[in-house]
Length: 125
Image (cartoon, rainbow, N blue to C red; front, side):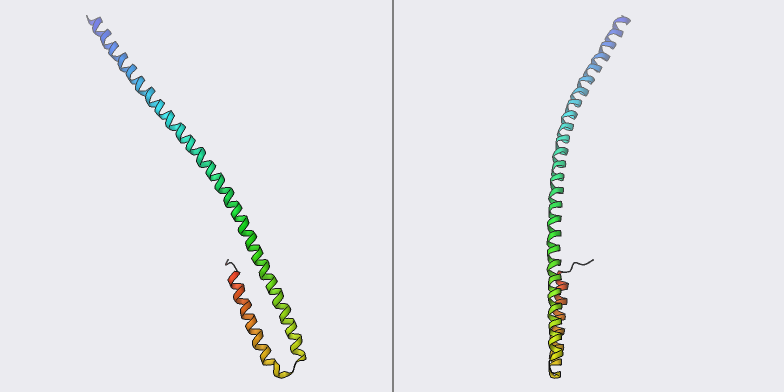
């Protein structure tokens, strides 16, 4: 009978191993499914990141072009202000001395106005 008891013990051990194997197989299947979902999510997120990077680059380029246009516009304003000041200086030289205080006032007002506009459109740092 001891052989029969040994076989029963062995059968119980085999059944236990088979049951554990079935549990592990089911767990593996669930984990593989979860891994596939996670990989799919990663692919979607990588695609979104790529799209966002492209959008960010495009926006950055557009902002750069806008800033360049504003700087160009500022430069043209400064060039025009310089031409007006030179024309005003030539007229002042030929004008009477009584007109001189008026020219100084108008020149300082233009200087302040140009400085305000320059500060308005200048980007810090």
